[in-house]
Image (cartoon, rainbow, N blue to C red; front, side):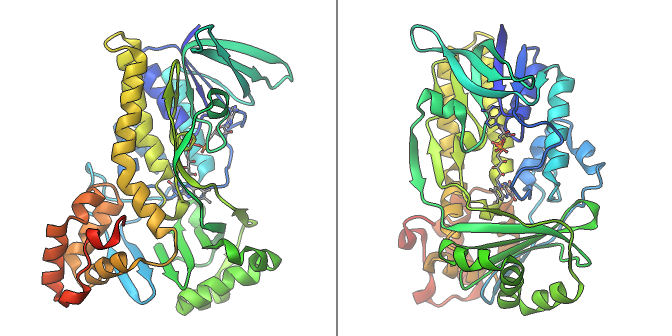
Length: 415
Ligand SMILES: Cc1cc2nc3c(=O)[nH]c(=O)nc-3n(C[C@H](O)[C@H](O)[C@H](O)COP(=O)(O)OP(=O)(O)OC[C@H]3O[C@@H](n4cnc5c(N)ncnc54)[C@H](O)[C@@H]3O)c2cc1C
């Protein structure tokens, strides 16, 4: 009998398993993948995410893998450019983009080192329930083709957007917003653009330096462009760079060499799922998923994975009834993630709303607000604080925005 079984061993699952094992609980974490393992996801990590790795003693280990540190960011929409970097966030002065083969394996190793039992090539196919409906374990298909049952006081679904745990407990979705785009990405040598996130005419590209002296290049477009794009991905990929920022397009054409095949995905909708119930919880993408444009999935998996582990500890140690402790995790996650979720959904339109255009137009003319903007983006300031009417009024005053163009949150509804 385990204290906790965690289903899924990547950004959400392994940290939960590691943190509970470090507290002395008997933890099993299972994944149908075998690590190191890639996944279809780009892999930018914000300062708030690196701060969690640092707190867990894993950041130096990640740095030692040859992961480049980035200390300048550039966001542009049309001709509006916001450039710079955030204030230190919990002492973290960099962002980065580690390959998932490296990051996820490091997290799995850390869980194992902490004392969690890790079973790879082990896919959960069902849950075990007590007569009163409480989840009491999992049924899994094993690497040897057989099936096994594992019993636990609590089961955590960290098994991604198509979560088996969520399906088996019938967790409802709420705040769903349909996804707008699709992504193509790959890795290129011969160019070095540090960090870019540029949008023009509903076309976006992002660039981020990663391991092995490669640039990760990502293109995002709205779904109506998919059929055309898929017919000739190489030409369409290049065309986005040429259209959004011709100087980057020219550099890519002249000097860039694609080192790996494209990964392509019609990613899932934005949603929250009910993430707690008798004997179970959901964490990471299983419980809360949003468009990849703002690159917050990994950071959120770390932040709320840690929160879930803390709340589970309160429950397992008997301080608080465990289902209440986990309900509190879900309540706080929903409250604290609302700003990132709202901003991400707004940005995923690949065109700025009049409100965001007004604010970011002003930000682009203020070095201090550019810093503040990246501090919000990096997780050091909430979007409520950043977009607070007083703060925006001071910004508009500073850069001399004409009264008719001074849009406030009330003009936008959501961001
Ligand atoms: C195109 C794209 C780009 C992205 N770019 C970024 C980015 O730049 N930065 C960022 O922070 N986020 C990004 N994201 C989001 C990020 O990938 C996710 O938020 C993050 O991976 C969530 O981690 P997770 O551990 O919750 O789930 P996942 O990473 O999906 O891991 C779930 C794990 O569960 C396992 N699993 C599933 N079902 C079972 C089962 N039944 N039994 C056993 N194991 C199971 C899977 O094998 C998998 O290993 C991107 C996503 C996409 C699609």
